[in-house]
Length: 424
Image (cartoon, rainbow, N blue to C red; front, side):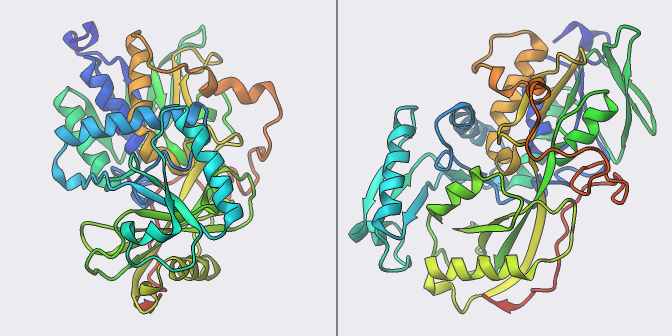
């Protein structure tokens, strides 16, 4: 137990009750730190609640994000032993397929680089793809099997992590918006101000996801976090016809792209409950919550190309959320030297669920002054102030979280019913 706990004081306030904030609270509490988690909405009410639950190493180029993913894969396996089974952790592996020899050659070079960093990637020739996925479309050139890829139910995982953090003494305050960051005369963080009063602590963790830029601003600094919209289709329940997480090679390029235009590359996977999840699209349209029929059409068509057996399946619903995008595709993790006592844990884009445990462990290490498992330099929050950030916007631009036409309100996934009952 920390000295702060023994005197009823806080070591840190964590803003955000998504899976990243929950992981920060869990690992901080496990380290004996006293924390409060504050969110203006509900648990997993933002990006986490609109996610598929991907825990991937297969889509990550060698570098800091892959290092973060490999650490998280190990931590998720450990968490699966202590969290309730309703988190639906499935170490089912991923299968990346190539439509032609050119794409297969690019996948082969990609996988070879990954192996040097500790990833297990096994080439699967065309005539053996159906041993892994019997219903996969014919005519593919081959693929790569990634046994380290896994799946989890993201909203439940966040809720269970927060419950475990509460057992370590964490205070959870939902439906309470942070309206200001309190600072001392020297500029150091002293806590947060909310509609219900103040919470005093020598550290504040910005785990606000897509709204990380808005939180940074009320703390007196800047992060160029932008929303990147993504849609997911949910089919009617059926026996498990998709065994792995399956996607085509062009998904890797979409993840790494900085384009604001609509991009889609189907990721298809079964779930323990029966429905098939089909994601994912990417586009930067600000916080536009309207339904994009073009995005849904593309996803459905690409899913049918991968798995013709899905052609007559019915879509029960479609939903979408906003991923917290940063221009260099790396999250910000760690202390912000511009505001002493302010830490960031946001900007993970579509990988936040997979990268949450490693992020939480690293943040807890900073708060507790312990040894870090990874170098935090690539994730420095002030790295964007050293150069013009491509794609960043001044406050007031429609892509900006502070756009006056879209006031800050509880971030929640919209789940439009317009496509309910449609055939895939």
